[in-house]
Image (cartoon, rainbow, N blue to C red; front, side, top):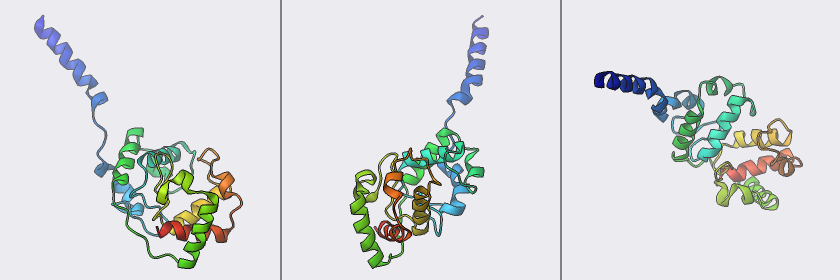
Length: 188
């Protein structure tokens, strides 16, 4: 009888083991990410830097891509296989990576961008030095082309997964102002 009991317990644990298994390690998950974002999260060109980004923000964005709340034809194929735990793992991994300084921005444009950011009080949400917090993204040292594209997407209503928070700040910005802001944030 005791052996039957132990066998039942053993089989139950064996069946339940996958529920207690740990998630995939970050190194197993970053392969597809590294093609565009770099293995260490420092991307080039139009892709966003993930290094130093807020872990919570990254996990939310990945889940938004997965659900369709944020649309991007390049990201969609990759996020479909991620679990919620995978998105947190990736967010934590990239948040701990060192974000390299970007190429020197145009100083005059950066100065204009600094004034615009102060007028809009961007720091009130994106925090001191624009490093973000929790669900608010880091803007400092982000790729300039990516920043321009995202600010225009918010302004033009093509990106809406921020619960409408950016609309009041972004909807009246000109392309020139957006360009100036991108030079300022990139150079920080």
